[in-house]
Amino acid sequence: MNALLILFLAIDLASVKNEPNLERRSDLALDFVHQAIDAAREAYNAGDSAKMQAALEEGGQALEISYQALSDAVKNPRNSKSFKKAELRTRELIRRLDGLAQTVGVDDREAVAKLRDHVAEVHDDLLKGIMSKKK
Image (cartoon, rainbow, N blue to C red; front, side, top):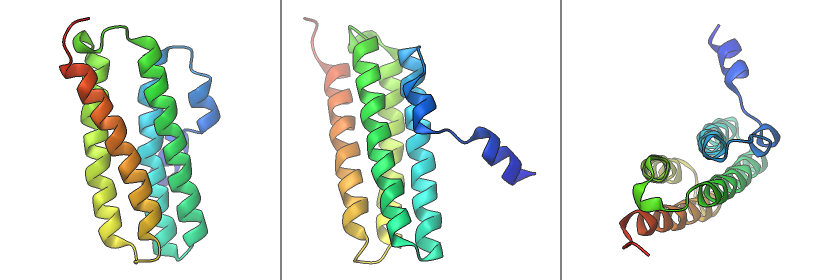
């Protein structure tokens, strides 16, 4: 039953890109990043390093889609609940990626660190937008 639910809730990157509501697209893309981290962890546990790296790369693409959609949707990030929600979720992604980096071997750690650094950059940009002065 749980496997069926997971398959039903699974999101693909094409459906995320086709979402017309930009704030919803951002949320879906962040959901996809969470799923990509889960897939990377499962691939690592199965011993498939290539699949793990592919999942992490897809997660990076989804993160870019999320940030771009949010930037296009919101004119003033200071007054946007979507920006704050994305900031909180990217902070959670950083924690999850730190945990994954501690789990994987030294050879695979570089791919995890690359995505973690990218998520941290986006998190910092979101935070700067929220905390910036009025223009």
